[in-house]
Image 1 (cartoon, rainbow, N blue to C red):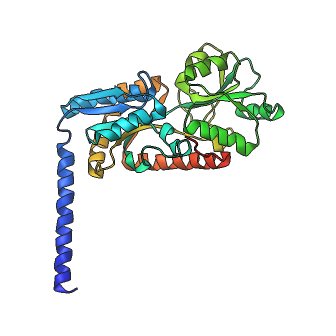
Image 2: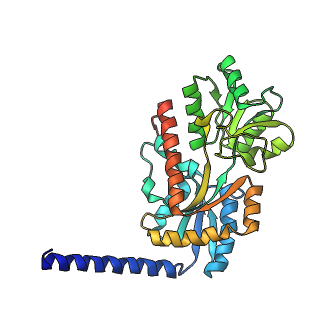
Length: 324
């Protein structure tokens, strides 16, 4: 290697090492001021409860206030827009991924790019169930599918805006099943209508339908999660029931702004994951229909990519074209 080229190479390595060292030093000294979590859903939601549990423990660890602000509305866009407008690595986003992984198939020109949301840490998986009215003689997912095929167009279903809607709609399309979708702004209303047999199938968070289930008005025929959950030991996964195309793990976690260095995201993730060892945090998450599942940015990104691929396949099957 010529001397001048060798000198340039050595200088480049030194410069890279200097920047890496600076990034690491910045990560170690963060936070320098209060941290805010902007939550895409309202108070009492799974992501809200999980964020507040973690924030309380991070306040003590970081020696800085960690404030949780609910910014519901607009299919998550209200919170996402406020988060990106802040341009601040002390303002983080707390959200289920199922809302934004569907945005490219809902909006022609979403006001952000997927790369604008840099994953920091997953905290939990939402328990997602497929429920039917207790008064219907349907005991399994296979029986639900058989009845829908035998009575095309007579059964109604409701889902949850985002990835869940796309996955169930895509499944029906691929299976050649005619079932009418009933849209709901409030998922509790969908659960109430399911209990009254005004709709016949609801794919939603377990926490939403649990009161009606405990009242004996609903029956769970499957979970969309990858694995069974301890609280519902007799409810099979959709894969176990023979319908793997319905598999979906709800992902809840935290995101940083586009320019947040990986070293800092990993540092924050390590502290978040540490809070997951607290048995009180685990118990509260389980009590609100979640599966504690703490992990860092790499694992979280892989899970998000998998969900995006599932949603894209469902949107393709549906022939979805964004209109807004």
